Length: 361
Picture (cartoon, rainbow, N blue to C red):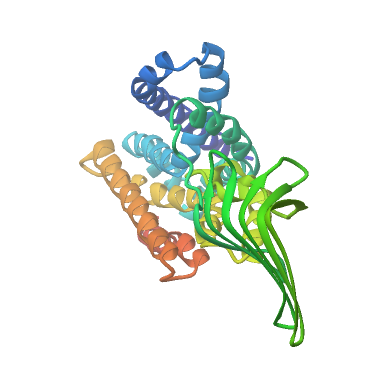
C-alpha cells in the first residue's frame, strides 16, 4: 500500500468512525428521552439499562445506518480534498481516477466485511438480550400470536387445527388432529380442549373423540368427560410471534426457521426471507455508495462541501425510499424477495457506473 493509499484509507476510516460516534450520541439521547419514563416506572436496574439494552441497541441502530454513514464520510473528507485542490494534484501526478478508487474500495470493503458478519451473526445475538428487555419493560404487548383458526402441519402427514388458542392459559380449544396416508384420511382426533402440561411437549386432551379409517371400515373411540395425555410436536411458542422476531435470529437460525415454517404450511415467510437477503445486500450498498460519494465529491465546485453534502444526503434519502418501496412490493408478493431487496443496489450500481464515467479524469 502506497502512502497515498494509506492517507486516503486513514482519512476514510477516521471520518467514518467519527460520523458513527456523532450519530450514536444523537440517537442515544433521543431514544433515552423517549424511554426514560418507562425506565423510571418499571423495576429495571441501571445495569440492565446500560448492559442489556444500550450496549446491544447501539450496534443494532448503527447497523441500519452504516451505508448512510459511509456515504456522508466519503463526501465529507473527499470534498475537503477537492476544496484544497488535493484531488487535482493527485490526478495531475498521473494517478488515474480508477487507481484513485482503489483505497476507497479497500476501506469500504473493510467496513462492509464488518457489517456483513455483524448482520448475520453478532447483532442478532445482541438483539435477543435487547428485545427481551424491551418486551419485559417497554413494549409489553408486542407479541402477535396466531390465536384463531390455526392450521399447521406437525409432520409430512399430520395436520392440526385449532379454533382458538389462549396465550395466557396455554389452552387450545376445538382441537383436531388429522393423519393422512396416500392422500387418504386414516386418523382423526377431536378434543374440546388441549392443555399444555410442559416439556417434553406434553398435552392433555379433554373430552376427546378418536376415529380411525381402514378403507370403508371406521373405528370410533370416545372419551366423553375424560382426558388423555399425549406428546405432540407442538409448543406454546409456535403460537407467539413478536413484531421483531426476525431480528433475534442469527442467519443459520433464520434459515432453519423459514424451512420449518414452510414445512408446517404456516403463514407468510416472505418477511423473514427479506430480512435474510437484506443482511447480505446492505454491505454491498456501502461499496456502491462509496463510489457514488467519490464521484460526486471529487469535483471542485462553487458550492463546495455544502453542495456535496446536500447531494449526498439527497442520494441517501432516495436510496432509503427506494429500498422501502421495493421491500413493500416484495412483502406483498408483487416481486420475489431477493429481487425486492437487491433492486436498489442494482439501480444505484448503474448510477455509480454512470457517475464514474462522467467524473473528472
